[in-house]
Amino acid sequence: MFIIQAEISGHQKKIKKQRIQEIEKIIDQTEKKLPRIKGFTIAGGTELSALLDYIRTVTRRVERQMVDLKKKNKISPESFQYLNRLSSLFFILARLVNKTKGIKEKTPNY
Image (cartoon, rainbow, N blue to C red; front, top):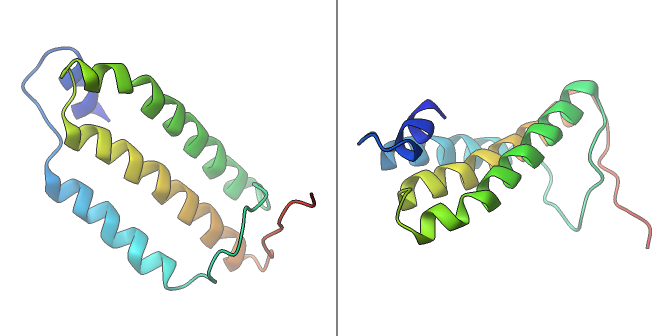
């Protein structure tokens, strides 16, 4: 996040593709431990899972706000992709926390 902040402020710092690949590897390894998602899930479960869901929401909000910077070439595609993968990581970790605590995922009733 510090690198992205530096990039936004005009420094030549940039997220390296290796960082994105590292997050993707963690996501892939963690997904193997979880049941396949069959629909939307309701956030929450444990306190830690709820906090991870909250962090994911904040990260997605930042990602949406960065769209204009990306269009103006003030942020690299790698930084934008990093934010996207980071929010996915928080989602997977929230699911893992719930599974570890024996909490089943709930889907909304429509």
